[in-house]
Length: 135
Image 1 (cartoon, rainbow, N blue to C red):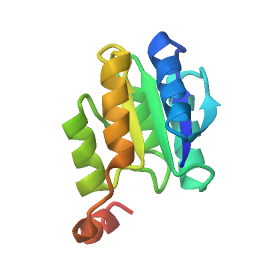
Image 2: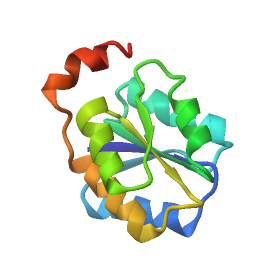
Image 3: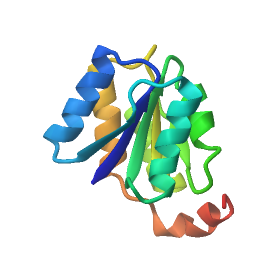
Image 4: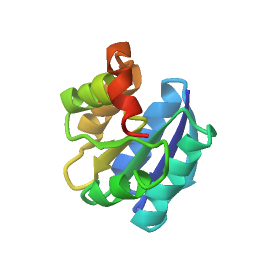
């Protein structure tokens, strides 16, 4: 899987997440590393919307700014997730294609867990009509 990665601040957590992605066999596309949060969100969103990446990961202090910026890109469904169950639901029921993480709240271990679940969870076909309403 191709994963676009962007952050407004390079931290030990962001570096670990990129290493995890590569270790799991994913191609990491660093489109914003680092860029100001609005630019990072839009850059990752653009990579996903254009098909350059299958999914994206965005990080900033709260995770809110990058998720808002990514969601400005048509076709992007960014979800701010603080735990694995939220990430699972965001993929299953909302077909989220960009994961937003808070650098304030996320440790490398928690980020790894959330990211792993996000990448391994498929959207439910029964939600397709609801997802279509987001376009």
